[in-house]
Image (tube, rainbow, N blue to C red; front, top):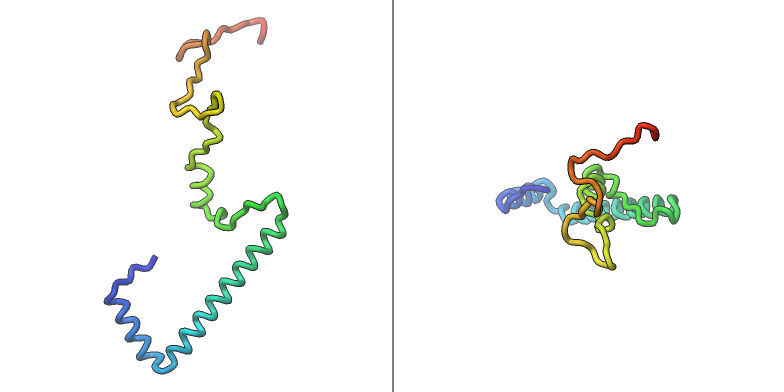
Length: 116
């Protein structure tokens, strides 16, 4: 997320010491307290949202609303439920859609003028 090396981190620490001086521990403590309060607020808002949606949405995750996550979850993942089953096991190869005695690839189905 942040591309900060050791040299840049040292410069930031020295700059913080110069700017805040002796009040650096109190500033760090206040920043930690603020982050903790923000995290608690976010978690309580998430819990209220899930409680308000009811039992139908018990598996709802707020992160699923992110467009990248939504696309990855619903379009890019391979669902095992969609794979064909035979005798309680999943086929590992591609399913064959041609039925025995059915049409070959490219063969046209019979046409009945009276039926249409």
